[in-house]
Every structure is written in C-alpha cells, then in structure tokens.
Length: 126
Image 1 (cartoon, rainbow, N blue to C red):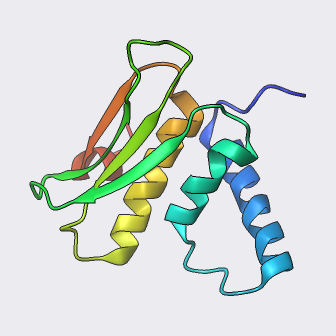
Image 2: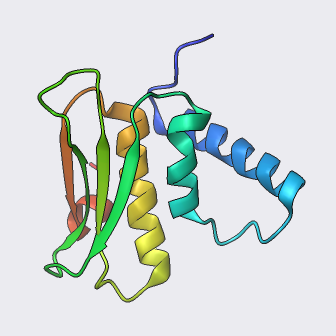
Image 3: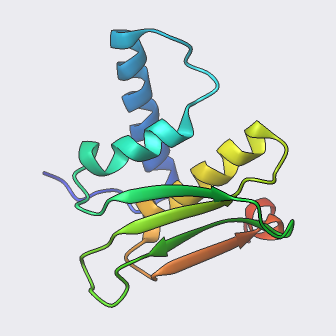
C-alpha cells in the first residue's frame, strides 16, 4: 500500500472518488456534499486509526472551527474532535469550515495537535 498523500489536492481527488462511488451505488443528491457524513467515514475508509468526532456549539463570531487531538499526550493514538461555530447562519459556510478542518486532519495532523481557525484563517491561505 502506498503512503497517504500529504497535499490537499490528492486528498480532494480521493474524497471526490469516494463520493462518486457512494452516489453511484446509493443514488441521492451528490451536491451539496454531506460533509459531516464524509468526516464520519474517513477514518474507516482510509484506515487512519484515528477517529473523529464532530461538535457544533454557538461561539464567538470570530471563531469558525478547530481540530483538536483529544489524546495529544499519546503520540500516534489520535482521537480527534472537529469543533465548529453553530452560530454561523450559512449552512454552506458551516460545510466549508467542516471540510477545512477535515483537510487539517488528512494533510497534516501528524505535525501538530490542534488547529484553531478564525474567519481570516479560512479565507487567507498564506
């Protein structure tokens, strides 16, 4: 088995193929993407061994989302949580935030134990 990609574009391609296969078998609407369902499937499908939970809460308007390793003191035994601001009024914006945090999980969760993203972080990628 080859190593998992460590860049966003290859992961996006893998996720897109996964979604295409799911909808070819099960039908239903392909868009908008059910990002929460996708997040729940990623650890098992890609055999990461590091589960993800999702929690929405009404928070400070400056806060968009975050990814935290709940087992930060045990390297290699990640148990991750994606937290998002449920007070965001746009369902599309919430999906974007969840997808952004999933990107942190897929691409570079091995580099740090938490990612805290404000609106600026998710709109300015430099």
